[in-house]
Length: 414
Image 1 (cartoon, rainbow, N blue to C red):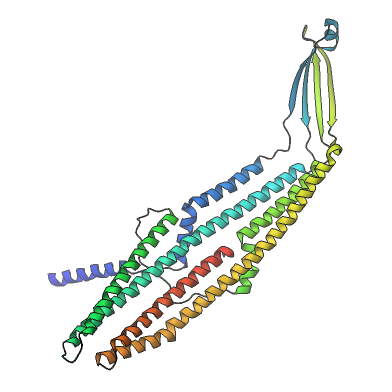
Image 2: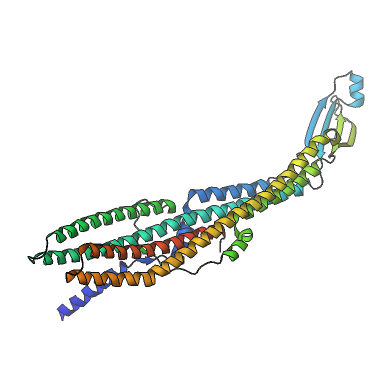
């Protein structure tokens, strides 16, 4: 009874350990967590957010009323004149707002703030996509290590078979040596793959703001290609979803507001003045005055007109920049969709008929080699081809995932 209980306990522990060692699937939910962590912890994301907050503060700094001005003057004259008119004068002046300038300034600041917010979103998207691509590379490295470990196990098995065959006096001893050489070479390749995996894990830790030595579980890529995006539909979404396009559109709005500001500033400015006179000898009030002042902007009309013209040209340039950026992103979107489509097509082909035929060929050649009707060179060549097909299928899946990450930066879905 005790033996059976111990055995059952051991099986439970072993089963739990095997379950814990199962590779984690690199699906969209897993990648979403990677993206969010990178956007949350990377200093570049923090910097972009601070710039957006600074733009918001700039908007709050715009004033409707300029600061009032106060003045004090003392009269130097004979006593009678000072007594009659007052020798201490206090003055205050308040400039009046120019119609439309304040609202145009607020509109410009709001547009700049929205542009900075869009840039901040783009920065977080790029940082998240970069970390996700590293995670995809890490999963591909784990897949490669797994396939190389299988290849190494097969070589060990074939090396044992070669040694058993070499016992026959009619067989040559070259085959075991060749197999041992292949075994050493594949062992070195496996060790190199593990070092690459360690480097990718460190890179991903840095992108996420974790400790450089933080451990990562074994990852695995999806077994088959993901649904494909439609190129025309993705291109149509650029002007509505791409953060940099949205940012440039807001700068166009800011340029329009700047032109309105320049046009309003060429109008005359008014200010209200008030003053009073007092005699210092007795402190008696002598007079008070209220007035209105007006600026004469027509003397500098050419300067104001140049400012309006400059603002109009900046608006046209901003519109052209939007069109230029949309064209550039259209090219990138088409390239990303094409890469994702090609990778998916090749992944499907390599996981189906291509892999199946290569596997059957390898099994046939292996049986023929064991029965001495095929050469060792043929066996190794077919096995390398099978390994290459399986690894390429994993690479194509990784290529599709990376292309989709690029597409998500260009035309975000969330």
